Amino acid sequence: MTSLFDSALFGKIQLNNRLVMAPMTRNRAKPCGGATELMAQYYAQRASAGLIITEGIQPSAVGQGFMNTPGLHHPEQVRTWRTVTDAVHAAGGAIVAQLMHAGRIGHPSLYAGAHQSVAPSAIAAAGQCFTPSGPLDYPTPRELTPDKIAETVSDFASAARNAIEAGFDGVEIHAGNGFLLHQFLAENTNHRTDAYGGPIANRIRFTLEVTEAVVNAIGNERTSMRLSPANPYNDISEGDSEGLYGALVPALPELAFLEVCEIVTRPVTQAIRQAWEGNLILNPHMTPDSFPASAEAARSVLEEDLADAVSLGALFLANPDLPARIEAGSPFNATDEATFYGGDHRGYTDYTFLDQ
Image (cartoon, rainbow, N blue to C red; front, side, top):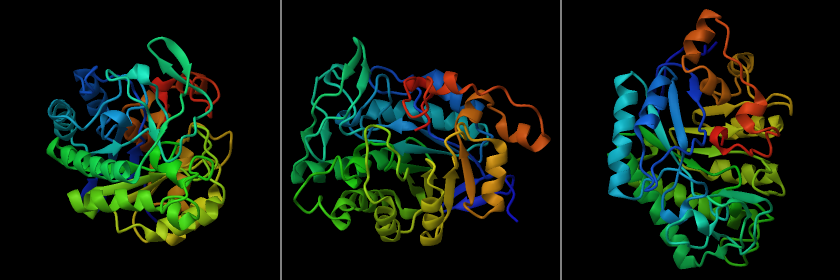
């Protein structure tokens, strides 16, 4: 039976153990979107994780959704991220960059150019964005034209190349949590009537094109993806989740790994496990009360062969040396849900500790 402390090779990414640090928004980047020394310290402190998946990194200026989040679309951003990856590697860790385009989640007041957010359709998200002026309603986004869709696909490929130049071991494409790729997948956010909308076969097209472009840019052995089936975050309603992921997962190319963020969708998780022939990482939340995920849940994931590794968020925030604590049976620092998630974990009002 696989142990949490067994090493693994996911594509070309070496994991020293099967405990993965989940991506979590931190809002600590420079105004230009560059990484900071504090970010380098934060990630290096957690380098004993088998793998670190970074906070969401925008692949373009228009892809930013929150204040003080980092990018990988400018040479200065690439340079500053090298400080982070060097620190993690010096501490013996591995780190991949999560590429996250926020789509309709954002606000013009966040950006120097005050640009309008984009989405598959011109449908505003319910809820508010935290801005320099305080919480403001999400505005109606601009519907992406076919030419702009192609440009966005190219942005992901360019950001992936920048990630490798910055020293990352690979990238994770974020296709969940109500951000742009998820917006294309979901029924309530994608009302298009062209080749990117309507039936499931069309709604998965953009995600597949982004994946193909990133694979062509850096290789399938350094490319991965995160999914969050049936996740309603950011005002998402997928429709037929089983049918959606039943079509998407088998259509994906070979990847270093697929990460599933579970939102009380164990049957869908099991179906993905059966459909996906490659390495699978699970961020486990089997019940509404299982936030944040526990060390016991991590062990059970491997015991039940639901995944090949386990990603944890809040436990890694509170316990930078989490693998050593689990292995030694040491006590954990507390993970107060109200502290880490701002109260209701579905609301995620505290962006600093968002497990994305």
